[in-house]
Length: 280
Image 1 (cartoon, rainbow, N blue to C red):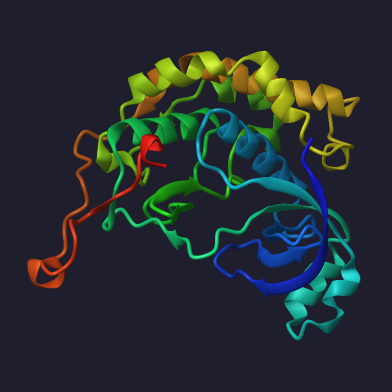
Image 2: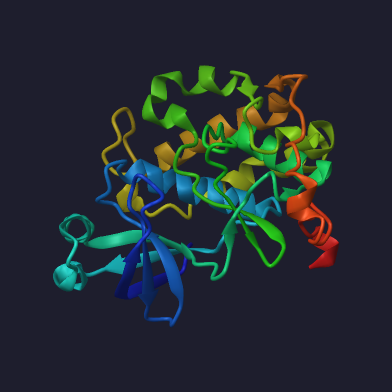
């Protein structure tokens, strides 16, 4: 189960995302990016964040730590922004927090290199969870202390918006042509060999158990939250075994072009290489 903390101060909104997450301080003295139940995307976004974020962590990918965050709407009374006030008022109770990575910057494929092994693991993982939001337009990756971190998994597992299609959706291909890491030659076969055996029913059951019951109640077609959790497990387990065979990538995908020499000749080696696990 995710650790539970209490939000003590709303610091500032993050306007990059459509859900208007915010930086929040908590009673454990930590600082988090909070995602709200009252946001327009609804609680299924938070369910996806928990299942996919925890799964990524268990597979050895870098995903910020997740916590449950209790929010008292009174925190928003002093906010001058009316939109933020309304969001906080609509989100009283349990929300989701993820560790804030101070000093991190957005991943830019023109500035950083990712080795084929790590790129393959990220692409395979995104194919498993059917992540449609890791393109070069919106990478949803951060570079922190030289490492790549994966964030924002709310737009994944799109089948949970229409459960009758879940099993057929699990068999669909994944087009990675637009993936931000496609130009780095992702080693999909190596990723599948290393990661697919780890995606067991036991692991997925543990991951799904981290989702709070109140985010799963009243789902049409399910008589209990446990039944809904099993549906998530079944869909991901079915997909994990063979999804690597259905990842397509355009052959013409090329590495990003370098900026002109006059701009970079005085700088260290470019693109900057992100650290491998052995470096950390």
